[in-house]
Length: 393
Ligand code: SF4
Ligand code: SF4
Image (cartoon, rainbow, N blue to C red; front, side, top):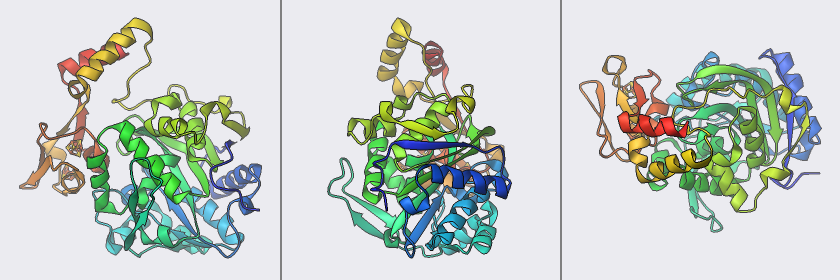
């Protein structure tokens, strides 16, 4: 019998040492069996959108996208159960959501082979439509890609990564990919701080209610994710039906306090879950935790007491001074214009094949940094920002 999406706060944690297909198949199956089996989430005959993290479609070794072995494991389970599976995502806000770009992204991320091996189809429909959500707290409607609108259910298969702006991306943030490419900056422009952006992400998840969340935390990304960080082994597959519960477990695994993350706070404050009620099944998370997982350089530390209070009041007052500023390494820039397209406030201009940034306009959302595959955008703090960062620890 199908579970109502999101009600079960259990999160399956299963050790998975690498990306051999047989190992990933076994780990994914075990994780989902611990939650009652795939039949608890989907029914035979349903059209299921399998939503990976396809951010710009980079090679699996870069650990930016959900590894094809994990996408294949889920696709196989769903196909075996009699579902019609479509793999789809709108990869990144600075990329035009076109058939040609999807084809390139699938090829680079290794998903063409996934479709061939599993019988799942790849989405090439680049249409979208408006979905109303009157119950939304901050967003009453979303523009959503057609395969997500037309699916009977969504299964999210995300990648465990740090994130320069939202601190971490796993289950909850991954669903933002169903907003079509160049419409993403509109949301960044409307929701300019991490907390309000988190409210929007919770609205989106409540609007679309994915049935199942699976996280590829076999090798995640640490440091300046979600694109410019470094691969780091976690050796786990996570699964659950509640996106905030799954992200709570992931945050704890990588040494981030869950209630430092805006979207987890939003879900908790709305009573959609309580982090204290999240429990794990399967392997002991303590044996998989990576407490020294490198946090993004935008992450504030965890000093306590008076020093922290003073630092935070400085931060509230001088947040703009504290936040790292994007800058362009001119020699690395190839003039591809992805940063110019994604910037929600039009602070980036590309002239004569080189990007430049108007820092007076910049709202520090770091979308340009996320989209630059050439690592030509760096984030640095000025002297005052470094001083405050020192006190934050
Ligand atoms: S900074 Fe990066 S994203 Fe922007 S134009 Fe240059 S290479 Fe492209
Ligand atoms: S220039 Fe500033 S506002 Fe524009 S995308 Fe980059 S960080 Fe965001």
